[in-house]
Amino acid sequence: MYVDSHCHLDFPELTLDLEEILDGCRSRQVGKIVIPGVIEKNWARVVALCQAHPGTLFPALGLHPCFAGQHLLDDLTVLRRRLTQHPVVALGEIGLDFWLPDADRSRQSELLASQLELAGEFDLPVLLHVRKAHDQVLSLLRRARLRQAGIVHAFSGSDQQASQYLALGFKLGVGGALTYARAARLRRQVVELPLDSWVLETDAPDMPLSGRQGRVNRPDYLPDIAAVMAALRAESVDVVAEQILRNTQSILPLLDRKGG
Image (tube, rainbow, N blue to C red; front, side, top):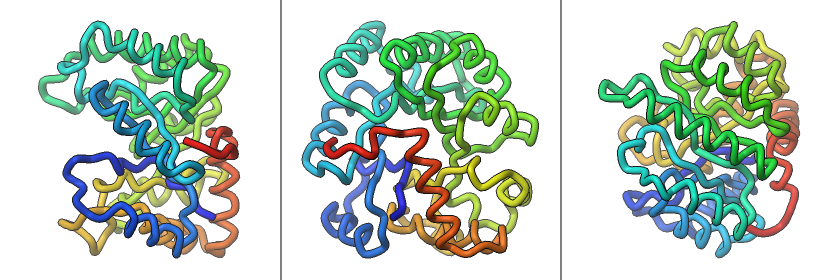
């Protein structure tokens, strides 16, 4: 069975029929999907969606750095309350995005530090969004000393940064980017790092696979990413899928429980 560790089925822009998507997932053995909520106004929708599909959809809640300007001062209080009221598999997406030309680095860093405190308080793993800020995130993680680690979503860092995340207990998320021949560094890292370093994700409806550019990405494409990983590593798809499943369950243990 495959687990999509990161998929945005709550996107308002996603006009495809949800039941049809889930049928496609079942037919391709994608049995569990993590749905991150990235702004406060979407959290209720994410929770409700997951509650409507217990055992298949699992929520994560967080304040995404790309929307730092939209987050209100009270959102952290609301997040704490929701974490108390609703079981989630992770806190996220959270992180830093310094690739944005108008990035408020101070605000993003404050939000991340506060949410890492919440993750420690609730003993939750984190789903990290990081662009052009891996060293800064690693510094904050070392200070936070989380008991649970998490996943570095859509990992794009250097070999040294990968090693530092792994030393802190994190897994590296890889998705559609792996299917492009131009992703030379990522492909080399997937081959050279141990298989227990990785988890698979689609980030659907974003991060389309090679050959599907301009089309809505879907969680039932996850086995196609696994097939590329297996081919690059010269290993069987079954071996890759089994280990990736173990990796995901080790970092997101609540996936073993029923319910959203």
